[in-house]
Image 1 (tube, rainbow, N blue to C red):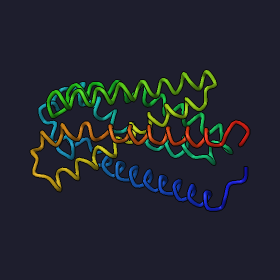
Image 2: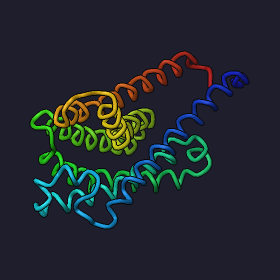
Image 3: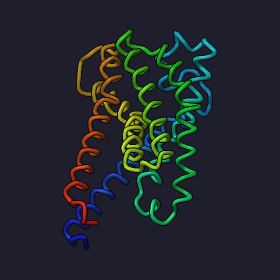
Image 4: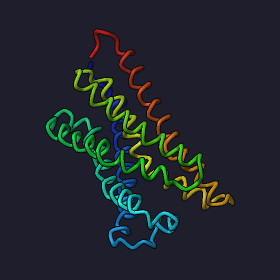
Length: 224
């Protein structure tokens, strides 16, 4: 079936919009990460972690998590690009492997340590540990599904995984909004932000997955 020009234009605009969001989010996160390259213990987020800064395992986990997270964000540019999927499958596979290794072997263990020492009391700790475990599970499931040859399921789990990856951006966005437009104390903001950073992302991912399934079902068994 030949796509209608109107539908093609809408899809192009959606793709462009997502690409712009990815660009802005990645650049903003990169700007935040640069400040930690000096290893100054009194900059940015570290100002809030002075109670834990002397704990070596936390400090190591923090720097590993911060500097490796940019790789997972950048991977989204290739993992969800139709052009790369069609024309550069080898690039898609290798970048996908880097993404998986980064999440499962580097960010998951470092994230667990950071979650245990999270600010905002028990609610924040539960939120970050939940985020980290879901991130690990969705990414692992994506690998297992592609090994079975189940590409649609692989795509769904990668969508969920990347929604949690993008929480690195949304977490900071919500925090900025709360601190700018509310009178809540920092501890309360941190507890709310811990959940708002990833739950809306997951809901949006599920909406995308359901919409994709409805679109495929609407085409019928004999229509491309």
